[in-house]
Length: 130
Image (tube, rainbow, N blue to C red):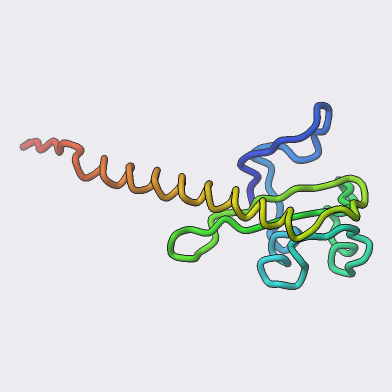
């Protein structure tokens, strides 16, 4: 897994753009496989999250993650929010808000893909006879 976009508070540089991790060592894999919930108020309450090295490395105390789906249903990526404190206020409404953002991003990705495909169809071909 490669981090393509990262936004964090000033001074926090634990995860940076273009950093990578083994997918099996991330929350994403376990959320996609339904082994972890999309909203985790306290990572200490889940054996899987406790066992992941990234939990201690950052540290992660709360977490929300939702997939970004392509039009065909495959997963393009994930939106993740990481908290360094336990957050009992996280709820399904937060997950729904992130799903809305994920759908907006998926739509933009689809539009960009269509535009690129359309543009490539109209690119002039150069034929040379050597």
